[in-house]
Picture (cartoon, rainbow, N blue to C red):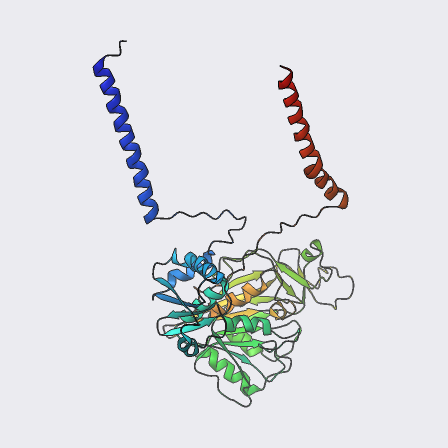
Length: 447
């Protein structure tokens, strides 16, 4: 085919159109890059991305958030703060970040009570809170506290050897109490023998394993609190005599006798048969997001009264291989079909009922050790303990945030392996390249 003059012009026109379109596409992409950003977190556990729980919390906020960081000019902290807050800003456009140099504005530093460089002040509506630790967990927990509509009092029954919500002994539940305080709850202890009235602003009344019997008048006050619609968390231990049977009847439950024995723990190296493990959870709001194992040392069983006026949901149950041992557990324990109660065993119940246009809630766990200072760090015990309080206080949207950590990338090498790698990279490979180069040079020179 002859390459005529019109054909040449047509090819030039096509090339020109292609060039114009190509440049237009490049320009459009460049313009779009200034308007929109695309980021991807390729870390193994997405530790540079906001957790789903933080994103869910941001979706519940109904007011703008303003964050003020007190950092000097040129400080490396500014970049770290901007990087972390940008994760929040990508999910909410009404989160504002500004910086104040503490050297040039000492008056604001004094007014805001700033004590450290890099400290943040988070403003939400009319409330604000100072944050000294830069992390997703601290910022989200602060937003969680600021978003609570009112003060939530968690009132702990005292005066009968109960576990102290601020105690540091292994038996007490101080670590759990600290977590609740960080999430905006106000913890108070009440001795009904000296203060014969449960505060009206009590969000949850906690009965945490009393060691001595309660007075009849105290039991009456607790029953009146429940009758009037108060939320309750009852933690009890096997074989603990606290004369609270009237409360169990009011809640429509039965407390089983015996100590829970779970052979599942032996498969995981736990030698004490009284340690029960829960690995499967129901779709109840308390446990729906639970994935980690929870550990329950020396637990007991619960039964549901068919005539209970409550809606009762099982939230914690063991596997079929477990049972309730009726005899004293020494070194070896075997199931006695004629005496022991076979599994699965219920050890946690959640109760609800409608009263005065309000949903009343209660949780009964036949084990108080799982949130004690000794065991709260095991598996998902802490998350479970916090989720229970969030649900009881009708703060279903607030759930605990697991800390993201990088995977273990540590490589251990023996002396021989280290020597081999050093020899290879320092001598063998450079020497091989040198000899190869000399060989190529000699071959070319002979030609």
